[in-house]
Length: 64
Image (cartoon, rainbow, N blue to C red; front, side, top):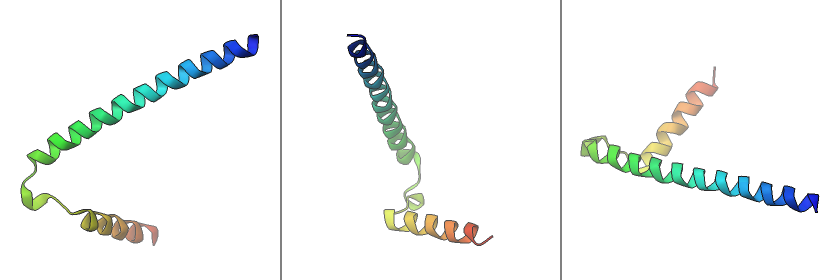
């Protein structure tokens, strides 16, 4: 009986955390969309360019 109470409490806490993370993700996605809309078109990078830039930065910084 006591074990079931813990399971119920754990499932409640887990559900609350999952809901909070989902809301935070939705907020960040909306914020990202708004900020991208404000950027000039020539500043937008393709996914390939972005990944190359991050890869080069990692290689550069990891050599030290």
